[in-house]
Amino acid sequence: MSSHTTPGGPAEGPAAAGPRRRLIRELLLVAGLFAVYKAGRMLSTDRTAEALRNAGRIWDAERALHLPGEGAIQRILLHGDGDALVHTANTYYAAVHFPATALFLIWLYVRRPGHYLWARRVLAVLTGAALVLHLTFPLAPPRMLGAAHLVDTARVYGPSVYRAAPATDTMANQFAAMPSLHFGWALMLALGMIAATRSRWRVLWLLHPLVTLLVVVGTANHYWLDAIVATVLLGGALLVVPRPRVRTGSLAVVRHLPRPRRSAEPPVPAVAEVPAVPAAAALPAVAEAPAEAVGAGR
Image (cartoon, rainbow, N blue to C red; front, side):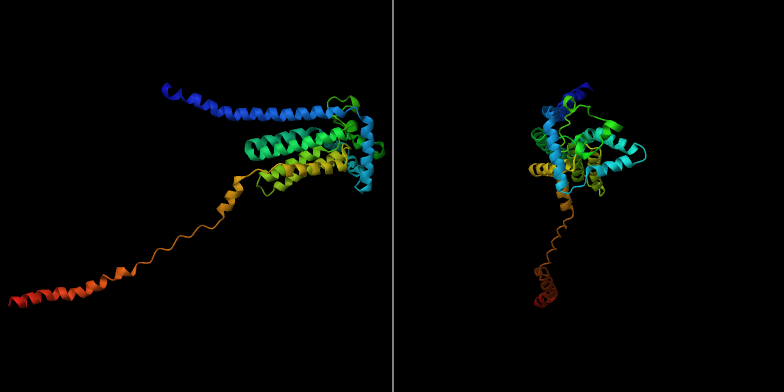
């Protein structure tokens, strides 16, 4: 029995090592990109005065564009019975952003590999463009802007992911408000799941970016323009990165094509009836032949 089982061990090793190496490579790639992004964001943490000046410009631009005030959404959160609604919004902001994106990429990697490469590249382009804007245009969120008269809901009601002093926060760059990657990643998650699934309810994935938008604005962490800019950058990334070529769509088209009709059987050639006529005419001749022979014998 050992002669049959021994060759099977080495044969299974390379087959299993291939997917394992690809998984390790993807994990290292995603982790490396995220580390570069986090390190790049920290380069603008000490630009407080510039970030506040840009915040005033964004606030004035929104009023000139007649965009609704961020305070309208915050009043809805604070108007609820007790602190449950605003606390839920703060938790959503702090706890859903990264895990939801990670689960999205993991699911695509396992179930839709072609869509995974597409989504990962789009997110990389979007995040890279956002990093450039974070470095060139530091922006304080509306919770830091006195003219906005908004409450820092995370600091007052909790939970909070930021430290009190933005300039000394070594965990996050609080001056990276534009664009809102909370909203950009959430929108890409929804679009990716809509593209990768075939359920008729898949449009409900758009609720995730919608809720995210209301949360980031209502908690005074982002302006409306932060989400608008994120949408524009995501649209550019989707134009740059080619969509995956999915075979299921083409197979579905072929499946509904009409089947080719069978060619009609060739008609029986007319020459097949010709032997029947001579055969019938030859019968009397055969019958008379013995009579002539008998007469001749007489």
